[in-house]
Length: 506
Ligand code: GAP
Image (cartoon, rainbow, N blue to C red):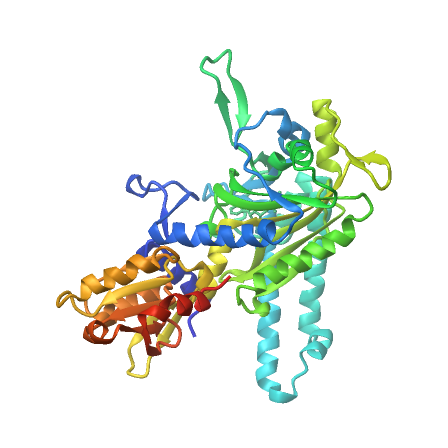
């Protein structure tokens, strides 16, 4: 079995080799934690975005879209709390000169203890065979209990420290746990400091007349400040939602793990405005609804889990993450937050404009409460890639790499391949392509042997390959090859549209 670190390296290099993701500014030695999407990546990314948009906007009569600007009035970030509180605690190792997020160092330490528990469980499972009762083992084994107690104590201390923003206690915790720098191996740490994650820039041409702006660290605030515009012009009735996708920027201290944590990334967010008091019901509704969306892509439920937040942000009265089992473990993919009336009330206060909803049933006005769903498009891209990358050994002993992408997301739905570059086969293939490309993203290829072309399309996840051969010219039939089963069947050209549509529906 291939280990997860190697698997992750394989995904990363596959993404580059097949035109999905490139390091930004690569010919200038790259820009850290910034990535570009290549010819196949942009298609996959667009398809994920529109799959989300369809589920949120097209399938919900009471959700509408928005595309707000990245530049916004700087006071917005004061009102939202980002200027004062959008910080990460950072710590430097004096020997390696490497910088870390203090909470991540502690969490990594906890993950190592969790690994030890998993190893104990695996060892016991092997020893006891079929009679093994994992639950009982976890509850009674002395070593596992000791590790579990350690974890509980560390997490209690960590949450307490973060809640109180107690930076000296943070350093003490790192020292008490004897955490060493992964690069230098030393415990020679600086103090812990807070670091604001927003990028700033200037608007205006002269230094004196210029004002400082921030690149938005979340798309959500564009929705809040347009709440009144959309509600009034769209005559929206509560409960209703506003959805938006777009770039967000964060000066992440620890930017690693490929497109998992980037400095420029894309979010897909929806703010759902509800009557105060009903927010927790809606919170549960959206938790279920969003999990359904993930599972609708055919990814096994065992790869997802909810993580309910113990420590809530100052604006939230409930929060949960949907975590995915990435090659580096279960990590946050999407957040669902019950944000109360924090944001709208803050904008009301800072702007001096009344931001309320007149409820005709109650005959009174109130500031709506908000339940938000927020997912990183790039993280979803990585989820799809990690779940789809498959290496297979075929019956003849040869290997193939296939991206088993959900067909609805695949960059190309169809590859159209003339068996040979002569005898009128390319012309016939192009004729078929001209009709299919109206409805499906098609790719025409005539170079190399047919087997090699099949492999190339397996590697980018094309669900259907159509081969045009001499028989096609005689009886208007082609061969249709299925990416996953590799089975081929002969079908009339006239049926192609229906066959492809049934494979890529959604
Ligand atoms: N408006 C709420 C909000 O922004 P968040 O948990 O900070 O909440 C939401 O971010 C989602 O955005 C995350 O679940 C993650 O998928 C994505 N995300 C956040 N920071 C990211 C980064 N540096 N790189 C890639 N995706 C990121």
